[in-house]
Every structure is written in structure tokens, then in C-alpha cells.
Amino acid sequence: MILNFQKIRDQAIVPERATVGSAGLDLCACLDAPVTILPGKIAMIPTGLSCAPSESDVALMIYARSGLACKYGIGLANGVGVVDADYRGEICVALINQSASEFTVTDGMRIAQLVVMPILCPTISLVSELPDTERGSGGFGSTGL
Figure 1 (cartoon, rainbow, N blue to C red):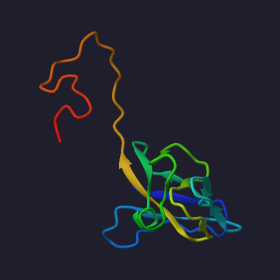
Figure 2 (figure 1 turned 135 degrees about the vertical axis):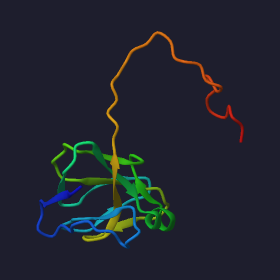
Figure 3 (figure 1 turned 45 degrees about the vertical axis):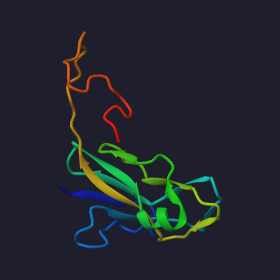
Figure 4 (figure 1 turned 90 degrees about the vertical axis):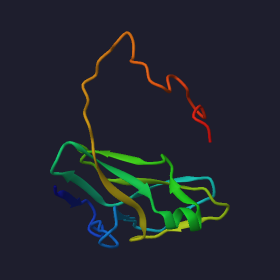
């Protein structure tokens, strides 16, 4: 599989893995000026890139960088970002500042990671009844701690 990236802005950084064993590709901010995110606020950070995977049965999942989350309280506003295989617009990252201090994002800063995931496209079937299981309809906490 090939991820074809297009630079929408000249200074955009093409994602790469930090190490050979890294699951994700680092996404970098592509900014004309630094962006300061106040505590509890969200900022949409552009990457300057668009992408076209060579396969249509994948999604590009955007995850927080653990260092930003643990050290600075910076996460993704939507938990996990999903970039559909047929999306051709600029990849942007919605960052949220969950700390009590301001955080400034600068051009070129690694802000998130991109992981390619296979997607199953099921046939949808409406039924009048579902098969029984041992768990049944037991929900949150029903299997214990």
C-alpha cells in the first residue's frame, strides 16, 4: 500500500515514523504564525497536507501524541480523528488544551500521529431478533471489575 501525500503549503512536512517500530507517522503543524491554545480551548491546526491512500478499504486514524498529552495536557478534541480514504482536503488536527496553562503550537511541531487502519465494509441487514449470547444485554460493568 502507498500513501500519496500532496503538499498544499510549501513548508508542509511529509509525515514519517520516528523509529522503525513506530506504529504511526508523525503529523506536523504547518503554520504561518504560532497558535496559543488557552486552557480548555480548542484550536484547529493545519498540516498543509492532503493524502490519497492507494487502497480504498482503509482509514487514516489520527491519534494524540502521548508526550503532548502526558506532559502538557494536549489531546485531540474529537478523541480520535478519522480521515476517510476518499477525502482529498487538507488534513487538520483539532487540538484541545486540557491543562491549566497556555500551550503554544509552532510551525513544524509534531502534533499528532497518523495510523493506517483496515476498514471492514459490512452488508447491513435488519433482523427482528438477534442471537442470544452468554452476556446478553448486560452493559457497563455487567462483567465485573
